[in-house]
Length: 244
Image (cartoon, rainbow, N blue to C red; front, top):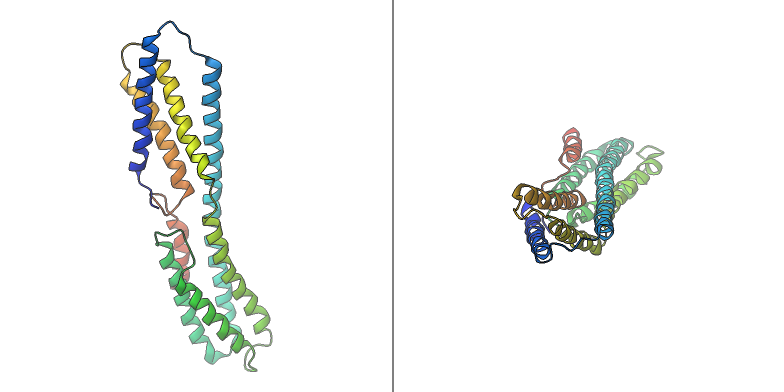
């Protein structure tokens, strides 16, 4: 799935049509008064649902950024503890760590929903097997296994945590409700336009603000799928790889 500002156009045009439909319905019975209680309830429900959805998207976006930094810290900690291994084994481990960071960076640009790549899993198995063998030798630090293996375990577990975080989203029914309530608000807004002359500025602005706000919510909810990225936090991975 990918997002583009063009995706906001269906809702935008649907709202324009419903505003016009509301105006024409009112023109057929100009003396019939609207029910402000019902209209207020619908607009209020839309605002409440949008507020919760938007705030939830922001919270999950912040979580994604924090998990990136957490993974960088976990890899950095494990990398530093390679000094506890026998000196002759350290160069090979450092090369594997650089390959591992590269596999994670390559996955960030993938259009898929941030799964752990096969290359990452392969490198995890290699690093773990070699670490088990290296920490059982008598040449390394006496605390090498006790300090390095938990750090590697944490480094591997964070990849699953990040994948699960990227899979956590509101149910589809929430976005369908936002779409339906937006259309309902447009219909009632058009019905309450008593002026026989269309105010195109207000009509277009009303539809644009609603559709763009919902689109922005989707952008934040699904980073890397559209214009909103995690480039600033991804730079931490690049800096880590360059420091190795």
